Image (cartoon, rainbow, N blue to C red; front, side, top):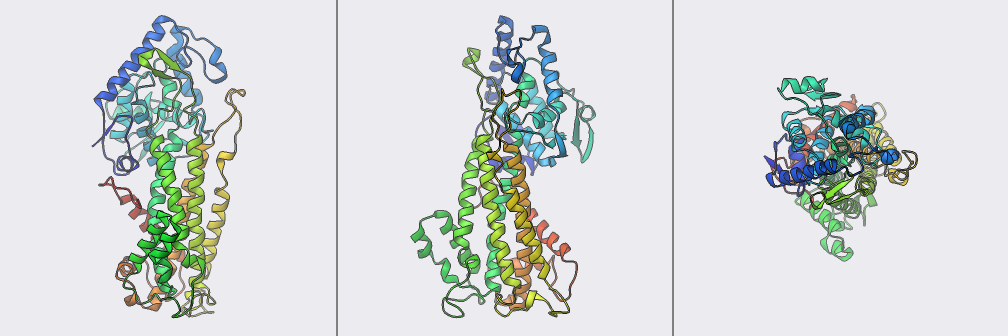
Length: 507
């Protein structure tokens, strides 16, 4: 059970809630602040004060005053009109994360929303009622309006939801749980949809998978080093202490641990003086990706605990400020940075795959690891597939954050495109897993040819685990099945890690 209070939520806890299906409870002290904030809204309405989003229109309509009797209709119209998302739905876990993060943000007590709305969001999380949310249509300022509007629809019994693996009308999902949907009151529609939770949810889950992939890339590259009889001197601690980056030194240390006891690796001068960069520079390149991950982690753990709607209420209602916390620029930059850092893991992995299969580079291994070179192609086209994917990543890695299109008649004249950046980051992470699965397959086959009994004890255990899902390459076959099996294994390991722990990987 995880207590949400609007601050202190970690990415590990988010993973336990979203993937591990751990239940959440609402902090009583935070709910007290929520009630005080709501009382402030009610005082504003009673006093006849004009405040954006409570008794005015939205965006370019912010100067249009709304009669008191129309404030509920205003919120309903807002949610319905803004629910215009496009494209395939977000994965169910992203939508679930959006609900968790919106709930956590509202618990900060600056949004003027009734406690019952938060209780219904909590019910969605704990009962497995997950909004069906189209993945396209957000500019990333004024927040993720379209995606969050689809989330809000479910709270009022409209739109669609996932329940027990089935897509059903939202009203039916609540009826099955014997719970009535809410009826929006003043400020509540705006409080629900004005935020960055789509980009933060998508980005957080992509980051959690990326972090584990970065660790998995180390043992996979370790197997490639053994298959290529790589030189371990390049991982000597003195080399990395001389550079000074702790992330680089950390990768080098883990590589030494993976390779300890190997009878396949070599020392400087035994077979060659130095290895190619894709082998020798693993600590420098992978370490730089860890620097990116450290940056992204820091920004996400701020964002998932941030008040990101507008206006915000302070001083028990005495101060109501229209600001711009909904602007997703910090997340957009972080996601674009994640895209670049993860793309490089795939780039260098594909180069190692090329060395494993190229007879001019693989140190005496069969050409393309073929059991009958010429008659059988072996792993030749696996490198083509990896090259295709790393090329696709280069397109996806173009920064979304450098783009902006004005909206709402130029009232909202600069936007972040943060949700596009987060979606592309998630695509790149999935692509990186495919490329690493190809390298793992080729390194597995090559180590089997070299003699798996000569591998380091740590990497032999990984080889044995892979042997459970992929057989040796004795005859050409449909290799997409092998790669898909390795990919699934990598994903399962990543998803299962840390569900009972709040310790960060790679820290």
